[in-house]
Amino acid sequence: MAPPVGSSEKFENPYGHPIFNYTQEERSFLQWAVAAGSIIGTFPFNWLYVTYGARYVFFGAGIASTLATLAIPISAQIGIWCFIAVRFIQGFAYAANFASIGVLCSRWSSLKQMGFFLAVLTNFTPMSTVVTNIVSGQLCESQFGWPAVYYVHGVGCLILFTLWIIFYNDFPERNKRVSAIELEKIHRNKSQAHIQMDSFVPYWEILKNPVILTVWLNSLADIFSGVFLLLYAPTYFKNVLKFGVAKTGFLSAMPALSHIFMKWFCGYVCDKIKCISEKSKLIAFNSIALLGPALCYALLGYVPDSLPYLAFVIAVLKNTFIAANCGGFYKCAALHARQYSHFVVGNIQFTKCLSLFLAPALVAIFITDDSSRAQWRTIFLILAATLVISNFIFCFMCSDQPAEFTKITRESIQNGKTNKISDASESSTNGTSINVPLNEKDSLNRRDSLIGI
Image 1 (cartoon, rainbow, N blue to C red):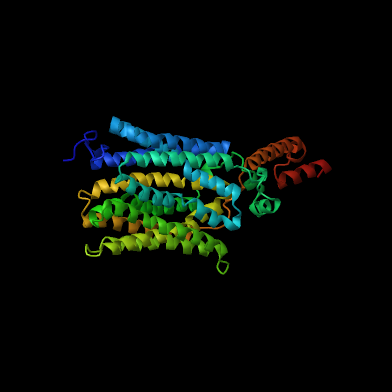
Image 2: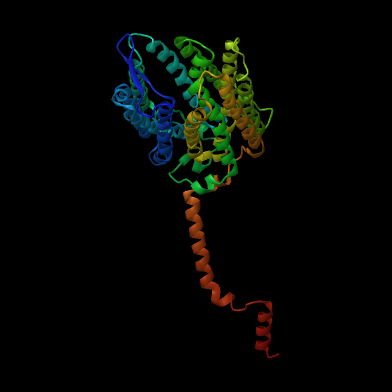
């Protein structure tokens, strides 16, 4: 029986850095803390972005993430629950990511370049994974030890968000670096409501839209399969494929590295292809992003011990296929929701939070021996089935046209109320003269009585 949470053993490495031997249950709690923070932070950050824009809100989230990252080494030494609390703060700050992507695409991307914008912006997870796995693997085996991983990343985070607050502006029309020609391209074919983007959002109409629900379903399946590999690739490579720690860090970064370049390529191509309809492109790219990884997961669990590098190649291919999602459900969300895409794309963060819950939950349910290939295979097949089903639904439900709720704005609602009041007023004014005859028969009887018949 695994020891209860809080009973993790503490050791020291040759350089004097503490080493904590956390149980599987404790490790799951540390993952769930990030997921819980992200779930709780998703909706507040959506509201903050709509109300105040992205510049200062995203900067505030970055500072919170910086402080939490720097605090991890000492919090781990204080105790598991302090560590969990700091991880919760990291998760809360992490919730700011996807909503900021929606805001940037809505304000700064032209409709013709939406795919490439999404490709660049949604690459933050694999890019950070490449840096983190390579740097962390080297630092952990150096004299600086694992605490240096968090100090280096904390300082890096502070530098990046300082650059953000210096250079980013919420309004292209107010940015001195944007020419009139560039501004016209950004605003081309956008409605006035899309350009203005006030704080109004028709939440209920969006939440019950079947296309948007399909987008969120596919994002859950796609991101869950990706998050699972990012979280547990080091464990699988080390305990099942028997790679060393340093090599595990390097190899774990390779699937993410392949994802980066493929996503940029897919984002560019999906905007440039003109020989097929936009909807057909959505279906094609979404199928690549979901069916490709489904096939890879189905094969991964059956690779024999004698071919560990074949399993590694399959993992790389899986992340390469998933890069096409920028031209699939991501682009569908942006094209269908238009000026409200910041809310739709922002709530993809919620599906990522669910993934952070579901991944450790699946491991806790199915994995009792993390060196058992058969136990990992069960999870791989579940992920493959989820991807196939989600893509099947997307093929029938996706749309590249603006949704009906994009016509609902603060102004349209106010005009609707004004029109109703005007109609009611006009009816009451004219009612005495035109509403006395109740029907055609009453009108004829009244005429006959007047002429004496």
